[in-house]
Image 1 (cartoon, rainbow, N blue to C red):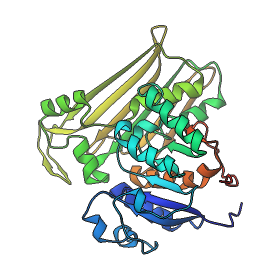
Image 2 (image 1 turned 180 degrees about the vertical axis):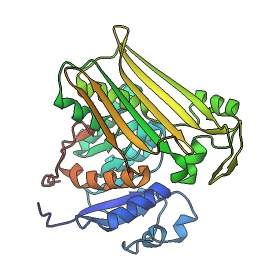
Image 3 (image 1 turned 90 degrees about the vertical axis):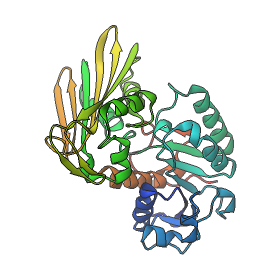
Amino acid sequence: MTIMNPIPVIHFGLGPIGQQIGRTAASEPRLVSVGAVDINPELQEFTLNQVCDADLPDLPIVSSLAQVQAPPGAVVLQATVSKLTQARGQLLEAIARGYNVVSTCEELVWPWEDHPDLARELDEAAKKAGVTLLGVGVNPGMIMDALPALLSRLTSDIESIHVARFVDVLERRIPLQEKNGLGKDPAWVQEQLDRGAIGHVGLKDSLYMLAAGLGWDLDVVAVESKPIVAKEAIESGLGWIEPGQCKGVRQEAQGLIAGEPRITMELVMEAGVAGGSRDETFITGDQTLHMKITGVHGDKATAAIIVNQAIRVPAMPAGLQTMLSAPLVPRPTRET
């Protein structure tokens, strides 16, 4: 399919992930960058192409959407926060200006369980404005939820699904290593995990999304997060991890029906994870299916899916959508 006029996009958030999104967008001819926003005053001293080090327009980085001149129907590529309550103001402002949004906000991927009122508010506002909101990423949003839901269509009479993701955080950016407590005291890490201050955001959302894709109503959802303690010294981007210190986090979420675990999600974010980074899905039913994927780099994959969905979002129905409702292939853009 040929799109005659590139879709205008606004880069909102230019940290490590936002910069990767910019570099990915630079090689996508179906998109054209028309604005750049970040609240960091240090970044505002530069232009979009300078910060991303990519062949992008020489756009000044400004502090708010109000300073961007973009046509209604433009797509905001939001890469700012993980918590939906923190993203709310940014999303509502984009909607009010007539912009579609593709966001890395983890809690936007499937917000109806933990944030039903906020999900309803955003959905109604987007429908009234005739724009689309889509929360997506490699995880949550694809590798542990949408992709297993698609794989499940190959079988029937499913008894259980086990989805596992193993990530060697030594291969990832420093902020992600910090988010998983590398080099910290395990007791402190456990306290922070219990508070929701560190660790992965979105595992429970992935569980709910996959259950919805299967048509299952879960009776109980349980999530457990634990630090992984180093037994030997490991060098990381944050310095040496000594024996007894935290070298990562293991999180598990289970969805139960009638007392039986039907969905299990296991996420291990660890320095030097045994067996290397990989993603696996096991489906037990009238057939036993096993899918294993290697080579998925979380940052690059997240940027790619944000850019790829920016092409699709203008043609999607107005409102709050998910990867379960997103088309697999681009369609002609909706008239605005």
